[in-house]
Length: 477
Image (tube, rainbow, N blue to C red):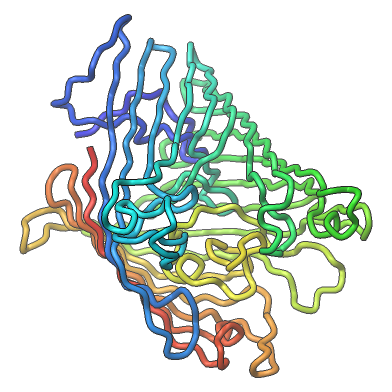
């Protein structure tokens, strides 16, 4: 059994990084320093192997296969009932949480030579780890119903459609979070100032990825537990970045100012055996203002509605997701594509939008990966169950889904001289075995029957289907 020492989190609408902050077995006695400070250590070791034919859609391309490792090590210091601090270290490369066995790699797992440093746990197989990131480092002070948390934190909003820097492979954000609760915890409030994205390029131009000014974010949110079967939430995020070098017209036009908002409205609950969620995200304000050309407005939006029916021995569910896109022949110059800031992790599907780029999507990602619902429409049938593995006698959790996806707005296929919008049909399966308390084995398998949208990035206009297989062994303590 695990326990958490940190202060209570706000709600599922805002992930403050407190869940899993200080986990230790109940049999472990925390060290006690002078003054009564309790020190708790937590962490995990994960080893994974994968076969991945999803980094491109080129005909007859070979897949990549290799093993990687991740180490997390955290220390929580509860210095008083009101004050605590947490530091968590992670192997990786700043924006990639795993390190490839044997040789250094880039963030996509491609070898970059044994002389490079910082990504491999063994750095060519003969040295110790050369890189350890600070994934979290914060101070939390909560003297009563209200508190403040300052430092590098894991943050996310709503159902992680617009903003998520709290999932695996996330480096977190530097932020100041003021939070509190009313009505016995039924109402939760928060105000956050976030160093949202340092060096983010606002224009969709990978060459400028390290040359723009930073984006600052300001978030206000409220969640309300109406009753045991209904929760409501609302969040507002204002994003601001300055222009580039205002004396350089070319640079200034490519790195424009940003002054836009995202408003999210969420609901989740239960009606009998049916559990449901709903999330709507709406964007407005100035997306581009370079002082030279007419300003471009943000007009993107996204929605997600899902539910599942509890059959007793398992659940079956439906999910619909939509994110707006910009028409390939759009004339008004505005940003109609839904803008998001997501972690490199799987959300609704494993391949599409995570391992494989959604063609034409992802306003701020150089390869379109981690683009979420940006310019995507998703229809999904899913099911899950928890049972006992007949071979091991241990708990076995299964999740399977079948998803049909298309672009919300067509793109131009230069190979076939026509428009295209079918992303394809993807089948996913995730199986997790609890081998013993704290130790689990997971298998993730996915296959995507690629649609005509991938014709636009295939070398010959005729892509292969894509596949992904990964298994992992993880020890948490």
